[in-house]
Image 1 (tube, helix red, strand yellow):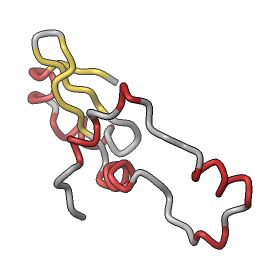
Image 2 (spheres, rainbow, N blue to C red):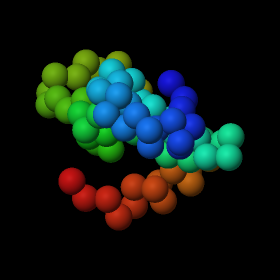
Image 3 (spheres, one colour):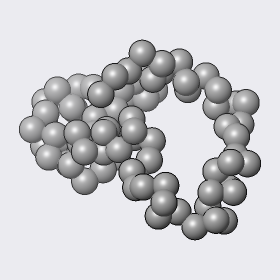
Length: 86
């Protein structure tokens, strides 16, 4: 869902409630500026995974993880969370 900054300011409560279901992109001058999301979704995104013990992973999954890499086009995203601490 996308809303303008003005629309968001006029209906903050409405969009806070909506963000519990889906992230809300808030636009400024016609371009995405910020995103409002639930705390649970934010936590999941920042952790980057659903935690479970390594012992629960099958061999194919472990091999896939060991052989995986991040595409160079996404390397800049590391800067966003570089100093983040839970």
